[in-house]
Image 1 (cartoon, rainbow, N blue to C red):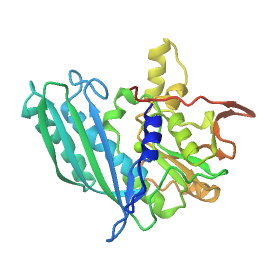
Image 2 (tube, rainbow, N blue to C red):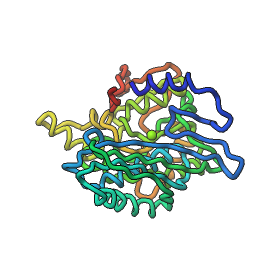
Image 3 (spheres, protein in one colour):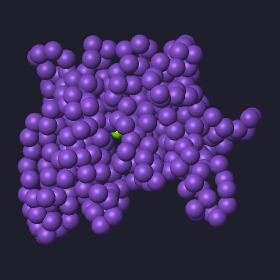
Image 4 (cartoon, rainbow, N blue to C red):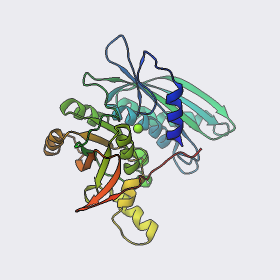
Length: 308
Ligand SMILES: [Mg+2]
């Protein structure tokens, strides 16, 4: 549904001289007269949808609201500059809740050297809603967008996938430094941060790039938590692959990398404590496939889609 809405919105918006990249990517890119182009992104999370205030700590929620936005800047290979934070507090909680949300955000803001530049705090009779808008700057290497993948490019990912519900969706580290380093040292054709599910987000890169993608099922790095999740669901042990492909909120990078750079990147493993893995390739025919040995099958992209 959200995708259809974005399609509609894109058709309504006239071209604007400032807007290099508009709605539909991980962030927008604005042309400026000054140094580099500016990247803007916003994310809104709400009680009962993205978290449960009866269960989750306000500090965790605050941290997540900021981290999600930093992850979208990472997806554009942009350097974080500043954020503004808008909060609608449930009246019963009072200002203490805002204090705790900020206590969750502040250490992360400091870690990524991002200014909390302002915002708005209101109270209402509904549940907690928190919206963060982040600004970043594009490096001389330019932004990383979703639409540049080419047939033959390798699919490279950071880290592991699946089972984020066991805690990773709160304590993930946005891959900002990783994206900047990779974009600086290697040629990247396209990329995003995996928020909605590996297979779904990969299909989005393919669709934006007007090509297809093949995932090698045996090469997908599966998080330990995904295996645990697989046991919970079925009462028996499986690989957790299903969760790795569709759980979402991994906040890992999915990249389209030309073969030579992919090879070099995998040999270098240049990231501190974060493993890079190749999990397949982009192909000419549009669509998404899974591959195991010589068997190639259509894969239905799965993941989190907002219901309206
Ligand atoms: Mg994103």
